[in-house]
Image (cartoon, protein in one colour):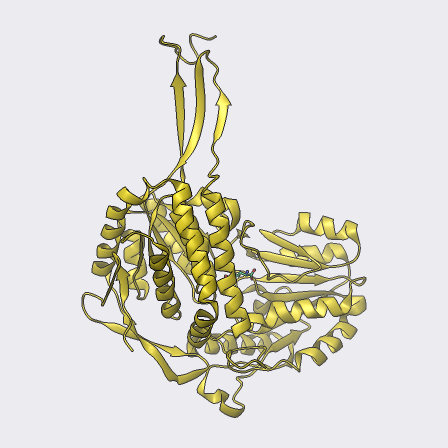
Length: 492
Ligand code: UN1
């Protein structure tokens, strides 16, 4: 089957006719289809359409824009099951999780529709008489959105919906691993009544992504992906004076203190480390245990982790779906080799999963390393797969120190019943998100999402903070005194 770009409300092939193929990671003989391998020319066409559409879209009152977005939320809800199946087929995670992914977009739409009626500015008293000061949010221009495959609907929605609510137009360059979901996003916005050209999808690889960043009419770049690519984008955006919001890598940590509810902490780490096959930027990839519970916790964790079922995401029994592709699988396996070489003990998994029919896909066994030390690469670097590194500490203070010894800062979690330690931990952990007695994954659409250190560049998607990224402030002074009043001069 052939799929197309969505430009100015039309489904079109790439200008040069080139395509790429997308495969089901659970079964590489299942070809989802061919998608346009777009170049700078396709990007230019889409950006021009988006630029033209700005004139109409920005003048529609924000609450009316919100009505369209609310309707999009309704359509996402109506198509949730169908879209979940499409998403599972192209990127692998279980249907329960792909339904959750779409739920996050539904929540983002409904939240966005309410934000359209706020978009609050500030009023402040003037220092002069018969003069008033206020500030309002204004749209910025065409937003270039580049997203990853692990949350094909939720993560794009975090950027696209606020961008549209603020009165901007959008060109989305989705990951080559989840292009079909992006096209459904376009279908849904079209059905909701979005005017032509306001939202566009251009498929392709880094050629298309770079062209989007470089295009002079793109004023804001929103990116989710690796830290290496994000930093390059930020560099270019700096040179080109573009606003740029980055969501990059993570190396998230769960701390379990000796007084914790152990079963709850095991539930948390199993979900955090092996949900979405560990392919979340919020996935738990480091587990810090207090020495007094270390052996017991590991034994119990292993008993439970051994029971995880690896399989295709569309099988109701599956807990852990495939990894996205062969390249990623090889990267994970290389980290496992490095972990062994560094002297950590692999007590579960550590190999590709071939059982039954799984050899046709890219499956990896849930993997646990124990006796890990903070200097090991498996404890420091993002693996983006079902690999958990466990480390032993003796005190709360040491746990925090080890947790913070990390170049990333997205999500952290602590399990303890000691309220003082729990609160102290969330203040001391250097991450954008912290959980108490809950896993490192589970962000909600209406709260700020993002990280510190190597994870982000100071912006937060999700919630009201996303509206900061996609709007510009306009300050307005209204002088109704009928005289020339010189600020800083006539009043002092
Ligand atoms: C991501 O991994 O890119 O909190 C996003 C979570 C999800 C979002 C993850 N709600 O894990």
